[in-house]
Image (cartoon, rainbow, N blue to C red):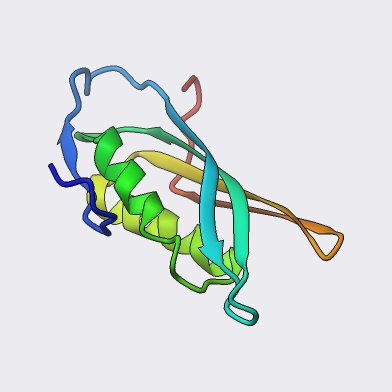
Length: 123
């Protein structure tokens, strides 16, 4: 697998599709660019999901998130796009992406987006 930033997300078969379980990823070093000023925006991206048939491969996720470093994007847009791309790749039962964007101009931004319904009794 390459080490070049990429929008290509890889998956692998869920090893326990009969059991609902939760997977969490935490990326405290996410970076994109402000689309108005071109200055870097830093964020903590948290991804939580309940897999169906596929799981997200970790290195491809790292390269995917890294691919935003040179892209201009509003916080709301990039958080929603991350969710959309991950759902398209893995078709999870449920997924949530939270972007906690660090203070710029005295304002911290938090964006929370979700896909699907979290099953009752799920972890």
